[in-house]
Length: 425
Ligand code: SF4
Ligand code: SF4
Image (tube, rainbow, N blue to C red; front, top):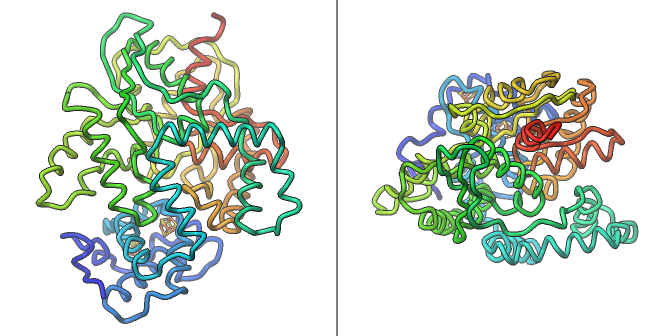
């Protein structure tokens, strides 16, 4: 049996006053209208399991697995319930109480333990995916059982935007293209670097054009967010410590990230270490240096050399930026600074797109339902491009737009800023 004290000194779940104000912002509740698939219902289940009143069985697992971890409930909660931490703790315990089946366990182990922490191996994996894309191996999906893991993976491959052949494991020093005024460290991420390489190049371009010298530290690795969200906290802690060591102690050098999911965890690395752990203080120092790209640029005193760019653009908030880091105005302000750009607000922009890490693979039906609503809202804006700032969201939106036959580009915020900087040059 767990103890509620397992959830940390604040016992985040105990703050819930059952008011239900979070229900209308929960994507799974708004699809199913079932209490057990609402934030309040999940808190109730987690509490009951922690007190030994219910079994942590398959039904419990279903309701917890169906949660996107989007944290929209946290933003809506007047009582300050930290649902994200609660969910992570519950998933960590669930992995022990309900071990996954052989194949699932093997895939998780391969991804979490070997692939994501190893940038060179991940690069080889994406090279192979590119090769499979070129050979149109996704067509094999027609002969494997629909709904099987292989079938779903092939469908994902078919919907994945073409992998940039220039993608490489970024590292080194990138000099300023204007008068140098600051040096920053860039957190390159793992999937972001391979699946969204144009966004990486654009990020370096924008930072350099704004007068930043950029260091991409060699020893850095995956942030550990996928591990943490999936109950693999020990692995997340190991990755965090590798990053903390790799980025050194220079408190005056900001660490810039362009991936919302990474940023949300990087800013809270200290939570991964126990109170008595001497590494916790180092983690706190590291987190204090982390800035999302939009946050960094919006605060920067150097004006971006933006030029005329005619486009009708909308913006979709990544959950881990708006709910995880409370950043929503900065990307919009930056977009609105681009001369000639027509900005149009997206209905329900703060709602999850259904990407949520590996959710589209593990919960394909719910992910597709949530994505369908998002794509309808994007189509209604009549925008030529939708901008966001997280690799999972970019891939999910691209897949949804492609499936719907809509010719709307998906761009990272850095990409559209970079286009504006280069316009007419
Ligand atoms: S994290 Fe998202 S999906 Fe999960 S309960 Fe909260 S609002 Fe619902
Ligand atoms: S809004 Fe907060 S306090 Fe109210 S039910 Fe939801 S989690 Fe509980």
